[in-house]
Image (cartoon, rainbow, N blue to C red):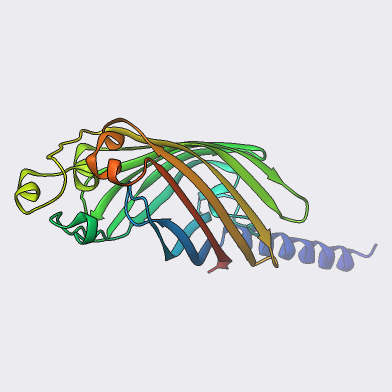
Length: 261
């Protein structure tokens, strides 16, 4: 091969390798956003349910310089919370407002709670264990968290099923907000005796979920969850009027993003 042709070929290969290296080092963010609707108890411990909007957000991959989390180069084929990997993740939840009307006349109104925090997970192809802890930046200002595990089935086409046990816990501040009855509320006419619960595990349950891909970027998620209140939460007079068994379901549309900057 002529020397000039060899030099040209070497230059071409070097340029390709440099381009690939630059692309691999480019900042990259992969995340998913979901919107849908769900049916859940009106408030923790309630016997009646209501239809309400539901939303989800999750980061599935991050790359910035030498910082790399999970595998953002690969399109996310399912829910972000089931993305394979080990490490920290964001944790988010909301609790709907509770009005002191009807059977709860005399009880104080409770505004919407917005909980944000962090979780630690290890997710393999067929199973997952995790722990989340959240602080209510808006609302009850207590701390609440969840321990859980999942068995996961993934098909070659991207369909997924998962299911496993759950245990929810919270501080006394959270428990007093949703399961307690103050002396003032009794004086205001609440039809319940005074009750001051403590913190700890307040429910155990089980969740089943499914994911159906519609395209590489879109999918449908669904979940069914049952929890049974325990401890001080189950002993609350509000729960005696409501139900220890808490059933919730939701369905939504998820959009996956894989952005390179």
